[in-house]
Amino acid sequence: MIGAIDIGGTKIAVGVVDDDGRVLSQAQCPTDVERGYGEALERIEHMLRAVLTEANAELTGIGIGSTGPVDPFTGEFGDVNFFPAWRGRNPVADLARIFGVRVAMENDADASALAEAAWGAGKDKKCLIYVTVGTGIGGGIILDGHLYRGVDGAHPEIGHHVVDASGPLCMCGFHGCWESLAAGPAMVSWVESRMPEDYPHRDHLTAKRICELAQEGDGLARQAVDREARYLGLGLANLITLFTPDAIVLGGSVMKSAVLFLEEIRRTICRCCRFVPYEKTELNLASLGEDANLIGAARVWHHRFTQGGGQHA
Ligand SMILES: [Zn+2]
Image (cartoon, rainbow, N blue to C red; front, side, top):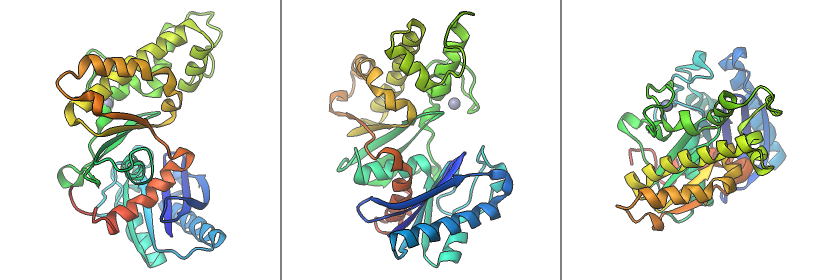
């Protein structure tokens, strides 16, 4: 039984996951960054002990998926946007000391990629790219069953390649990177910049709401969805051209509306990927559902300690 910990910008989830990727019990709490790292660590310890008791489980190890950047080798938090004061703190070492088991941590997108590759929509695929589209765009690359790592263990930022150099400036430094044009907030700002004064859906616009409005036939929302599909298609076409993967697995909140985008995505890939056998790359929706992050955190442990995924791929 693996203790799984998913550390996000707004909440921390803790669970017990068995060897088949099933979540046996779980708990969660707000991240509450301002209460400090030490206090968050205490809450994690408390929740983990509670879920272990609930599942009547003995702990083999602990896997962590965290919003990044994190250093998978030292176990330290890097310059995470959501909790700058936690930089350099080391939940891997701390939880290993508290629970007396081996602990491993990866970026949460890498964790989800590992889970989909082992137990989900990318099962049995040698070369797999997991893409999550939500408030940002992130992902993980699996080659021959192992996480691809860059120099010094760095996590490649597939959401920040340029798809339109005349696009908006992103924190990453590029104008018009994929995330700046195709993440959920980009849909919202595009609609907001074009909606007339009397647009009846002005308030509380979200990417999810825009997708619903498009399905109800709202003209502006439909244009936003078409634009989203085009940009999603371009980014995915780039990934297929660069990596020719066996499969791309699509997750994240925006992809819950994938039915609205898939046709145009496939058309774009077909138009843009003529130099590679794009038709052999499967485009699959993530299959692990709401618990994907916890399942991913657990898979981080398996990947590190039973698959030898501690080193550079
Ligand atoms: Zn960017």
